[in-house]
Length: 284
Image 1 (cartoon, rainbow, N blue to C red):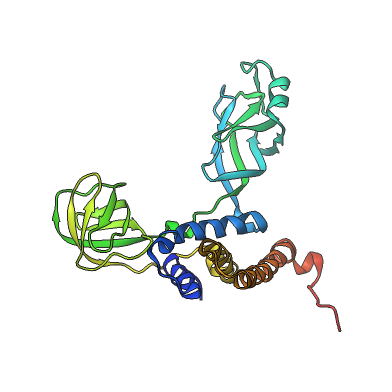
Image 2: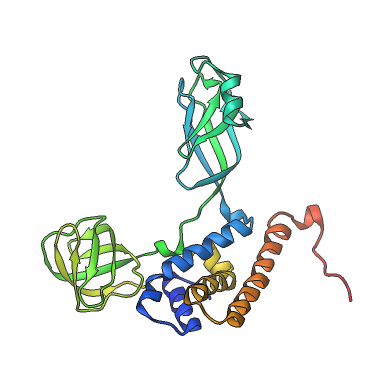
């Protein structure tokens, strides 16, 4: 079994026996905090990504991916050969090539700001690039489903907030498939079939007919579901100011689970039987 956003929210409410409105409204925060905890504690290959791009001749900057956290390597293709750039700090880059108008084959790069790398020397050609980097995966809370409505009055708009008149739930329309079918981010709770939804920008209204099932998962929610669950429960029970002994139990369960995940990251992802031999347990 793996978790979707919907089933994970249900598990958190069931474990804590809490469906209070304010608590439920913070479920996305608990899940995001849990994902952040795992991201920073375990070095999984899942958190690595490769993207290809190209430099611009005469431009000392190279755009950083929006989900970038840290570099593993940056390489260029130069005369059909792959050459890796050395990562330095910005001071080194600017001292090495104090005049950005001086161009050549880049040898070094540094993170200039959250949007750009700075290169040195300034590229003299549009070199193809490959960046291998540590990235932030899309959160489980960003799952999307289809919302079907009827009796539409007005015109709904993409990226506007819609709110249910009965449930009080709200979310964002990501894409408008047709006048009566929208792709929406899964709300914290659930819209009620038959209730009226209203567009926050357009003022358009419609009656909820149905929502499709939330079937989207992430690598963590599929392969480390216990780690994710107990990390969420730590956040949720801290918010509730629950009993210390129960909070300690959740922390212990999380620690056990994250240790197994760390063993996987260190012992399975980064080795193979040909190079390292089979992993064998110590005889007792």
